[in-house]
Image (cartoon, rainbow, N blue to C red; front, top):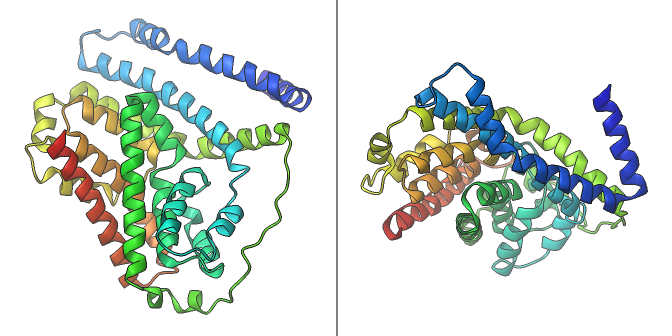
Length: 350
């Protein structure tokens, strides 16, 4: 009952004064974020564990990172939910329709950052783009960038590692998406779409834009939080639990020996391990954090993260509905080559 009453009060405040609602919500979020360290330390202190033990280190990692990641995720999903009210899939399709490759690949990859996307929406988005006349390579630039370089990944990377790592990941992810889409477009593989997709009638990409009030955009942001955070929180907790185990028990020398710069095979191994995994940016980033803390090389870890998000096996299975095997194999090979190059180059330079 108290939760329902608070929710009703918040909705009423948003309807009457959305700007005041945003200010109060930001202050509440900041207060909760500032209390994470003392709260996690207090939780570990009351538990019957030795503070110097591996278990205590793992618990400290989990109690601090779980609410931190969830708070960061809720904040960025809320903000991007409001932004996404301007960049709907229909608007994105209209912006890309009829454009030539090259500049369109860049635009598609950039739009992928701010457009709502998940693996389950890959097929309808792909079909919509093809019907609207969006070139195949441009469509792939969007499909690669949207899950890999999305707002959740960038916000969590910024919150956990700082702006340099977040900016590095942004540049690398966009480069892979743009280059892979351009290469696929140059290969002229439209014949390897499933027959029923190629035979679908073309449709207009025009759409009728609707104006929304600030209160409605806030409501869209809250709806995004309920939908996205409600779906991904189990993956987040699972990822943080794995990261806590790595943080508490895995020796630094061991991790450096298999994922360090000296192990040339660590990058392809990271990609091979990452592809079959089914998670998202929110679930894999806590694992990335623990791996880096234990001595894994940055290039290897970035290659692992990109392969998990951009080349997940479930997404390949979903795309099989609209793509023939040769096109799927080409897509995987081109993107994997880009990810491997990223991993090797950064292990060499950093």
